[in-house]
Image (tube, rainbow, N blue to C red):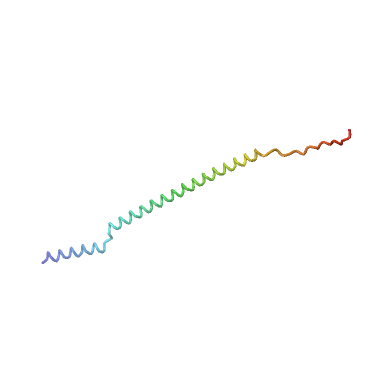
Length: 93
């Protein structure tokens, strides 16, 4: 009879431990999910930084192209007309 009581007590304590325990497997899965989320957030931030760097480089190239185009437009303009004195056919000789 003592063995049955002892065995029942062990089973009851085991059942309580499983029901009220912290669930190590659940904690491991939750920690793994947090690690994955952190890794994805880090990757997202890295992509955002790379995107900003590409945008900045594109803006710098566009600015250089605009400056070159403006310089070329300025070089292609004709020289300003001079206001030379008109020849006067009626001038006294």
